[in-house]
Length: 398
Ligand code: PLP
Image 1 (cartoon, helix red, strand yellow):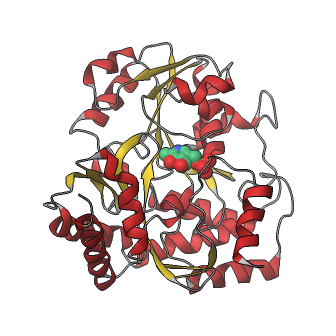
Image 2 (spheres, rainbow, N blue to C red):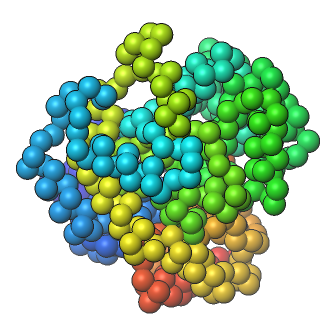
């Protein structure tokens, strides 16, 4: 297919979410590189938004998928048949997570993990109020969208799921809004789409304390922060706070679609009665996705990629922190926001990076930050090269 035809067919037949899509025409992925249709290599500093942590086409992931492919694909709706990749991944998660997080419900996506967690919280507590943070993004399905605070985004979807209240992230005085009426607080341990906003010391502990006082469940949305991206396997480890329900997706499937909500066996047991079969998914925990996810999580742990990400953050800060075009670098590990002094420079900066062979982008709720989230398998030499290219791109802004 000619490039011009490919692009026009994409615009004509693939439903669009914005008037000006990025439009990068992908031909192939290998390691930290994506190649366009003309064969030009670009270093992927987005990772499909925190998905491709193992890089593109990692041989271990491909081998795990192929092995499962030869055994079986889908066999039965979630929860009925015993499928080895699902069981093995759930068991591995229980080993890697602190108590009481030992029981996993697999989903296809992050938003579905959010929906499941909200239903579970309401069922356990018999309450319906949910508290979410301003500028949080938890997905685009009806329940997840109802958690959004920005009226421009949600106006067209009204009526929303009722009972949602918002608090300001990092604002201690709002914590008192959590009450005996609150079923759950859902929060990202580092806010992603707000622009990699890190909690101030003691904030998540204070939320945990208030949840305990009011018998409210605490849900950590680690869909973007989990799987080693922030320098520890789970971002909650930075804070020493364990949630009642943990949400995973994105990198969790090793590049395949997979999500999960994870809690204790005791809490999860409410899903199996009153009514029975009250929370179902056909494809959740697909065997190919679970096989890839298990390989990904083992690979991360064996190669100590989370620890490497923490070291790489220091390298990036050393190279870039004092660049005159930047105001601040936020985030942790390889989930970083490069905050520009001049918001008008955001799109020119993305373009300048593209010309240097770097794929970077921006955040949903932040008009001045570049998103920097390369695959965790990036080497130190490659990272130094990326930093040089970033500096060169930022130097061109005036
Ligand atoms: N939660 C967070 C923190 C996210 O960043 C996202 C997606 O960007 C989601 C939930 C929704 O995940 P999905 O796009 O897989 O539905």
